[in-house]
Image 1 (cartoon, rainbow, N blue to C red):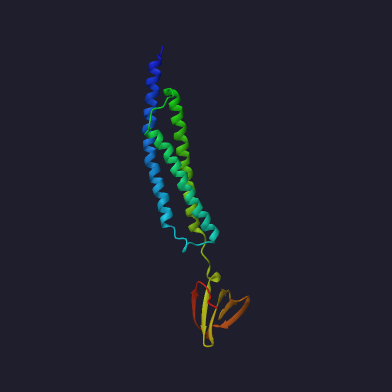
Image 2 (cartoon, one colour):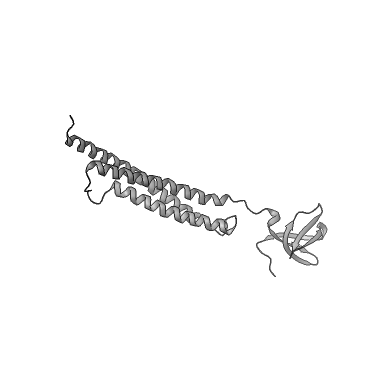
Length: 182
């Protein structure tokens, strides 16, 4: 027959194993926090492709991932290095520790997923050449507008809602611009 002392010793050994596991996971979580921080630091919204709402969602996801990763790290760290002894019996303490570890590890994976989703915004397709604004220099002056598809030998611009076609012989230079000055 097994004594209650043997059960408590087994439960304490299990808690020690759980704490060792928690310390290992804590190192992984710190790496995740570093990854999320690096993603946030390297993100340059000014040069990022895609519409502004995509960039705003990506920024919110990175911040949310950071918050989730912090909560997960605290959950695991409090089990890896408890501040005070639990008043629970060793069996109850083991269940409590397992619950916190599962939740902390699950939140860590969630944080990594959110950070990955946020960084996927950098894969948004860049503007095509026909969506970019250009200035076209001619002998008569400079025009600025959206470059449109055109038949061979011509350049077609959209200027204030109207199309202007120029013979390629009239064009001195074409340069991309961020915006047209008035």
